[in-house]
Length: 126
Image 1 (tube, helix red, strand yellow):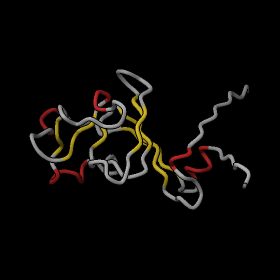
Image 2 (cartoon, helix red, strand yellow):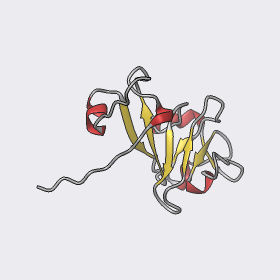
Image 3 (tube, helix red, strand yellow):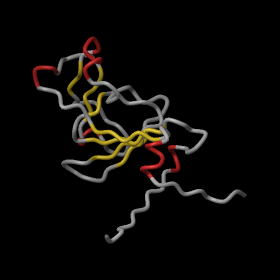
């Protein structure tokens, strides 16, 4: 059995291994009746529930940049009911992140596996 390796989050980001983001700040006029679900905190309930979601038009996805889900994203609610987590699986419907959600995205799975993020926080005094 191999030993666990620990990394500093800022090192992973600087090396292009990890990306941390939040959602797209869509105007109500941008939302539609079709397209990709526009996921909010209320859509994170023991996974994803898009039954009552608004939609973001597919033909305007260039505006949202990287704020579209990808398999392996670790998602958590950062507004409303804070602290719900979900994992974007291979078969999870693609969606656009709203500002109520944040994601951690592994960009190099040879370094870290997104299923095994362990977040440790330390406070350093100056």
